[in-house]
Length: 398
Image 1 (cartoon, rainbow, N blue to C red):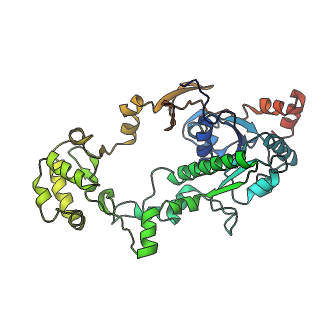
Image 2 (spheres, one colour):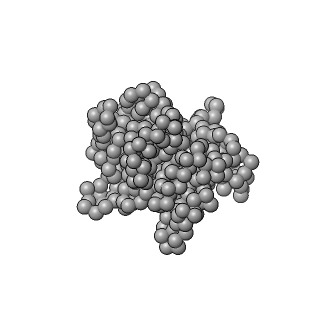
Image 3 (cartoon, helix red, strand yellow):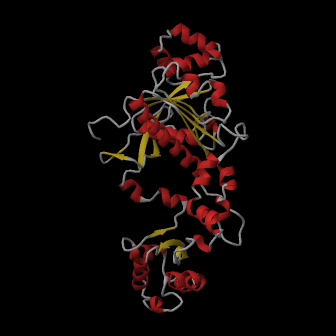
């Protein structure tokens, strides 16, 4: 690692967060060097701690670890007046306060810029909710899968003659958490220049709708509805889809004319390039079914590894891996995407490191904190002695 401090070293971010989207976003900030203090309810903490099926201890899950590397944990009852007063004391010396609570809760719990600007005018308050804080759905609970459904993702996923299909992962959560982190960092930059913070808002449904991108604009402007295509095919480029092989599947992407030329030469079918059904991008798209049959006749003669080895580096190609094959991919080890962390209940937990590199190195990763692991130290920084901390715990404030 470089001798230089990480980019966000010296920044303190408080985050009243739970489950996936918010913690995913603040984890990037923590791994980039910020001190992220995770604020959790004293009873049970973040609901993610109890998500099974794999646990390090009772109510201490591997699922929780996924989103909470490099953070500190403070238990604090924000429903109580004394808990909110402790929050205000912390906010006085913080750079940002984040949350991913239901849209009506930040104002009620004192997590907004208006509620905190008197103790810290430069404070940035970032809010991630299901549907936003300023509309009729503010009080609605919501999760990733609902957004995939309402934003149209499911209608674009799966085979044309099958039912709608959701993503295998909570991609809307991950995208929205990342967007929150981007907005928070932008507001921090402005606060350093101006001396004034502000509220930053992002919501799951808006993020999902935004990700409809070009199919959304095609429909809004041209009334062109993008259909589901067989074998996960690209809506326009052809061939750009899954193909069956002798032992499985692979994804081939001839997105550009040059890749089409390379493909037919490498697989020994240069005749396809001069076939009038396939000689232009438009004709290939119009005759996708026939082209699929021609190529599948070639690809099913050899296993996936043969074709990937033949085409790799020459054109975009990848095996369609199972989860096991994806995680056991030696390339992840070679590039440093797999690391190990020690946890009080298990040594050498395998983890996926940050995709971000700084000065050529992967970001450091430390196990997510036990519930309330840092409460006493953080409260001591505010001037609470051991007796006062014990009293707060007895009263259920921390």
